[in-house]
Length: 421
Length: 138
View 1: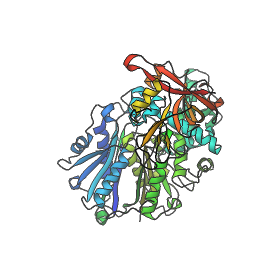
View 2: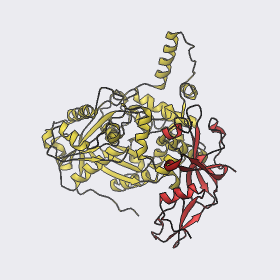
View 3: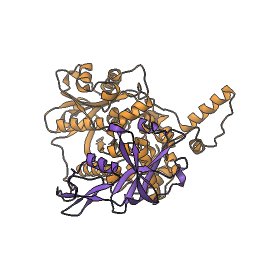
View 4: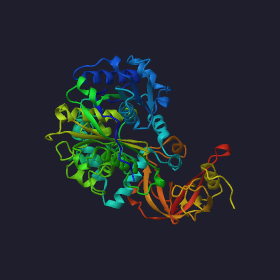
């Protein structure tokens, strides 16, 4: 039985910003974090003096491997003028900055600090795909690596188990991909801010201008079924089921609730925060869910007194299309085996009853692993404050949003519920 | 009676000897493959070695076309994918393994629930020698 969690004092988010996510040969980790920090500062409605920040928690996973440098807390801290204030790096694979956010929340809730910066950064694209694969495999389960599994492979196997159990198929995964691209098209920060239709048109134009045979895909699914356009990576995961290799950074400013009014009249309150850990494929009781997500969700719902139906909008960790469907179920938004049907019915679209990954998700916004967790918070910050522009969801009285971050193959999962009061 | 420690190193040594070994808890009878040094059900550390018969059925699988370096070395690539899977042993536990004797280029023909038998793939030589657990349709 899980104890009901509570914070020693309330914590609010009063600013959130991110760099553009993408593959940038000319931007390093410091450049990216500076972009995220500058945007965060610009979102603090009443302004703030960065000299008032008590501490930094920074999520980063693989810069040790990709950049050959591991001690990123003080490097980023120095970048924004925080020394001698403390800086701490957190590592939870792809959930690294969700852990930074949690540490910031706990540090404020304990009364130790009042104003804390949490964020994340990752610099991945200067390496070859093989090197990135090898670097990310540092978060894999050794038994799985030896058996030949890759990250897409683990999620591919998860998909076959889910399909066999619930009768879903590849077309259901395509619904997730098409929806993510439609959302990302409206997000200028997204790595792939194009719909599948845009990509098809671009390909057809290119073929025409080169005098090559023009493909005649009738619709998005025909494009996604075409192995030349969408080759298999790890069956049934194809290219368009997988998130890209990305560079990027994000940052969030957290303060004690009683101080929030000094920064903004529209803070987001951290009402639920949960984290769980999970096991490898061989040891999981149920291959078609993530136990760690269920535990994190239970913790966050219990703390907030909210139910899954109270969460109006969420960013979930769609590293692979199948993952988004599993999270919808593990977070209680839909019953087990019903997630793929909800996506098919359009319930998770921008104008659906439960919009999911309005940013485009990891699939299209990009997944600079250490920056993803707080990057998800940036989207919820925009949506709950009505600042999401063209992709603003049309829900009346939008107050409650959530972020779900997953590290490794489900080894670390977090769920955070935010409320605008 | 085996007195090797209940570690991954021992598990790997047994694979080299073509034995699929796990550990069972003397207190509550829980069975683990690969072996665990501590029972996660009752937290007893009184474990003993048991050998699996190596029969099971396919619980989940993937056919991998974008291969990691150690599989590229074995000759796999985008046009020659390999299959990895989760196998539920007759004794209960699940293991991850290579799946041989199935066509990775036609993954839609591979069925969950297919009965399988273990085999041992010996790779490398000298200090790089290792044995990979695999299964094939029985």
